[in-house]
Length: 222
Image 1 (cartoon, helix red, strand yellow):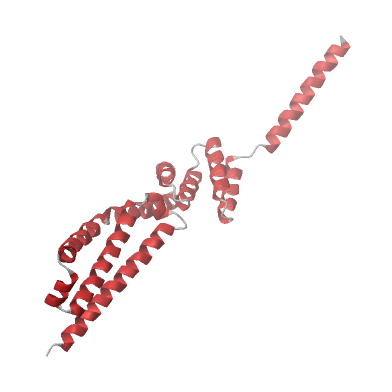
Image 2 (cartoon, rainbow, N blue to C red):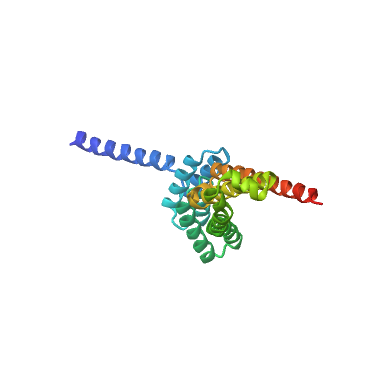
């Protein structure tokens, strides 16, 4: 009997010790949140997402954790996760009367929405460049080079070709910018946007050469 009682007492002691150690190692929502902030500063966004998610799991009303998680998703170019968590942060910050956080969330959401508007706004340049190319370049498709040179002259022909090349590059740049996924706009690395900018600058270079040739040609006229 005494042995039986001793076993029960030992079981209780070990159980209490186990629970004490477990709770001692268990992290709070604030600890996960602070660790996530450190991970963000170190550029370890994957770990930061895990930390902020754990923080929210412990405290579903932690508005700052939602904001930081949304911001981290934004840095990674993951738009759905960014919008979802930022909107949740906005709702909680309003409920909790946290005006400072509400302002920060609104600024981040404005940035994301502005990018989406820019993306949608690219449709007009695409249509414009396509029409210009169709009108300006059609004669080069259907009329032989020799005949065009005979009608307009060598310099005018060269100027037209440069202009058409510039418009093609501008159309290509705006098309890539419009059709690439939203994640490429907000990604920290912005590789696609950089490529588009380079193509657009090259197109601008060709158009400027075309204009320079036209100016030179008009100056030669008596």
